[in-house]
Amino acid sequence: QVHLVESGGGLVQPGGSLRLSCAASETIHGIAAADWYRQAPGKERELVAGFRSDGTTKYADAMKGRITISGDNAKNTVFLQINSLKPEDTAVYYCNAVLFLIDSSSRNLWGQGTQVTVSS
Image (cartoon, rainbow, N blue to C red; front, side, top):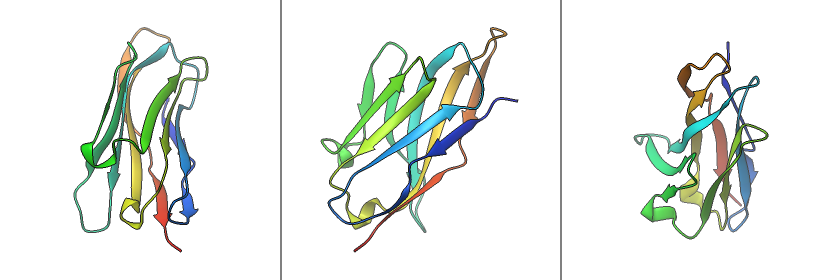
């Protein structure tokens, strides 16, 4: 059964960068839409960035200018580049994507989350 695999999180110093990845676990027809969320300890999950198959993107105001979301159709992967990381960016980052499967069905899935910790 297809699922999303996230990677790229870790411990980084303030001012550093990370690139998070969200990939389908098996061959699919394509990604219709993908959003990245984050959830910090004691806070609600919030939308960080969104990507649609037509190329449109959207970003949370609090992170505009520091993040870029992009998709690689050949690899069925969505990326989130985060620059100039701040301690307040520390959170678990989750990918939510709508996938077009080989059998022509679609599936709305969540990834397992990847921890990003920004600390000196």
